[in-house]
Amino acid sequence: MGGEKETTVEKKAPKDKGDKANIGAFRIHENNGEVHIHDDANKLKVAMPISAWWKMWEQLRNEPGARKWPDPVNKTEIVVETTLDNAFLDVSISVTPIKVSADWEKLNTFSKRK
Image: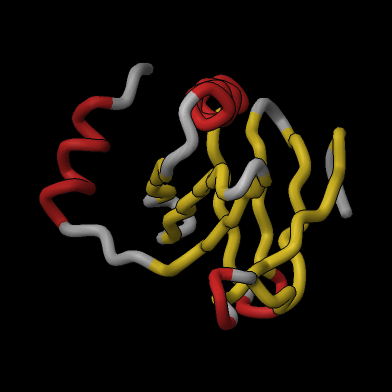
């Protein structure tokens, strides 16, 4: 896989009656202070600081719901959603492409620390 603390998580799609069908897997690992989530089938990747991942995960563990993280470098977004339904705790992940505006790029460049 490439990195440390490697795992895979199923990609899921809605089915009848709220169940979800497995439609592949995401590769997840740590690398150089980041958590990388790979959707190899669609050639998408999200990289986020480990601290941001653990903060997001802690929020989702304590209060099921959805959280988003944009990765403007890889031009992707991850949505992680935890659900508690009929005493069953589950998680779904999606990675989608995004567009980044010129204004966002300007402010991001301006805000970088040297």
